[in-house]
Structure formats: C-alpha cells, structure tokens
Length: 200
Image (cartoon, rainbow, N blue to C red; front, side, top):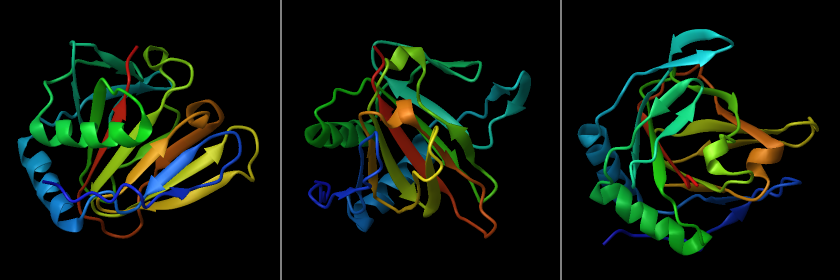
C-alpha cells in the first residue's frame, strides 16, 4: 500500500484560477519505487513537434497512457495511448479521490537532465474542453515550475516541484494562465512528470 498524505494542501492564491499543491502527496520511499518502475518500464518516445511552423525534437521524452484509445494532439503532434499500467492506475485512483474528476489520459514526461524543458503554454487543446482540470505528479529531481497570468504580469509564481508532490491546476488555470518548466543552469538528474487530464 502506498503512503499517501493528501490532506497537506497549499493554495497558491493566484487570482482568476485555482492552483492546489500537495508537497508530500506520497512518501519518499514510495516515490522512489514509482520513479524507478516508470523510468525502466515506460516505452519513452522522442517525437517532433511544430513550433512557429518549424519542426523540432521535443526537449524531453514522452509517453501517453489512457483508455478507449482516444488520441491527444498538441503542437502538430498526435499521440495514441498505451494501456494503463498498475503504478499509474493507482496514482490516478488516489488523485481522483481528492479532486472529484475522472481522468481518461495521462501524458508522461521524462526530463533527462537540466537541458530538458517545456516552454510557456496552457493545456487548452480543444479535446480537453474549455476549462480543464490538470493533475501533475512529480517524481525524481526537483525542478522549478513557473506560472504567469495572460494579461497581468503581477500574477505569477515560481514553485519548486519536489519528489512525490502533486499540483492540481483547476478552474481557470488553463484559461487565464500559462506555465513552463524552464531549463536549469545547474546540473539536474532525471525527473518524471505525470499530467493527468480528461479527454471529452
């Protein structure tokens, strides 16, 4: 049984949206085990995406898991889901208990080192609906995560996403804000990020 601490919640208190952070959602020991299993067992892909009309390799590895075979598209890339595995299914079930959401899909991201990143974006693809809820689990190396408001530069946040933490981006988060995981200037070990979402 995984050790879970779902009641340790921090509200980021950003206007126009709800962001909830659970810094110790799972214990270090359990997070260590999950990280190693996912690192070794996930069929990681290194795909091309289209940015400003130019095709580039994503600066990270990815894999899509989900049910009903529903594809997910972003930046000119369409991914087709692999079947859920036991580690991801357990996390899905536990996250759903605290956010009242039925997730159909998870995008797994492997940031191999400090050079891997994810630029400014919102998870606002049409198949997610107008105001989606995104649940983001972090495993492995701590990395800086940045959030900024679309129109008001004063509304922003830098968050250190730690091993075993959960960030819930809820109502308004993908409408009014963008987020990114920037490159780091200091050496970083690998980090796995699981972003659970619902495809309509």
